[in-house]
Image (cartoon, rainbow, N blue to C red; front, side, top):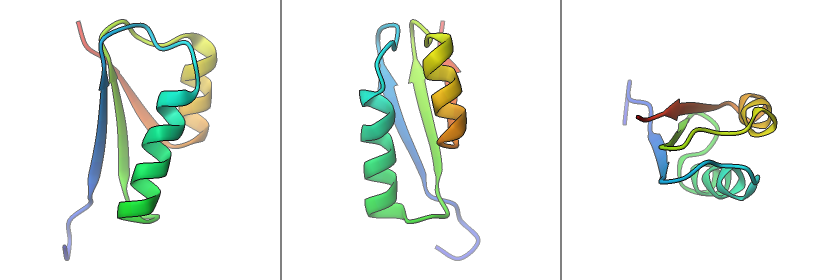
Length: 66
């Protein structure tokens, strides 16, 4: 894994309005990747402003897929 960054991606089909997907992604990334991982949440319906703020605080990149 030298010079590679593990990336954990979670994909959801709807608008994310609860924290659960963020915490699931955080838990899996922390357990299997440690501190030096990249976390990405792909949400077809996007995320609410509160979830976007929380994701930013948790270093989770949010991608709205159209």
